[in-house]
Image (cartoon, rainbow, N blue to C red; front, side, top):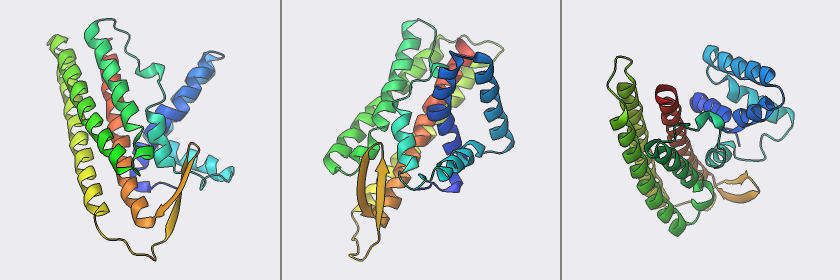
Length: 241
């Protein structure tokens, strides 16, 4: 399944975080110069042409004739919780900063379970409760880090506050998406609905076209939340480390 172009910028950033980034980190161990050149090239292209990395990856999948064999949106969400990039690791050893890192990792891992559990209502409801708790723990950890950042002229404290506000905004968006998900799933379905094949990471099933569209909205919103979590980690690393 392909992904809608309206979210290309997000998809491109997620692909960099969970696909290209980890590959380049492995390449750095063999040839750091080449890895840095490729990383800079992708960044430059995405700045000039937002969504370039998504188009590049989609073109590669089409070239290999595998673009329709899996749900890329769900796959990116799954990978978002399993990839632990060096670029996102916080080096400061203080408990406050390490707790933030642990809370961010925990939230991403829980969110990455959504594609598998969304088809089991009982499991999905439990996962939603875990997500809500993980979001609260992450926000508490961010607040503790902000409290330790001195108010200086470089504006680090204010920048962190802005990143936190962005995260809260996307958390509310995710919550609203879930409300729509349960509302729409309670409506009646028609027996002649077209079935859509859903495949990723070895998982395959057929669902109604309507269910597929509804679930995609949840996957997209969860991907945004993972990306915003990574934004916070990058911000802390840049401003405080």
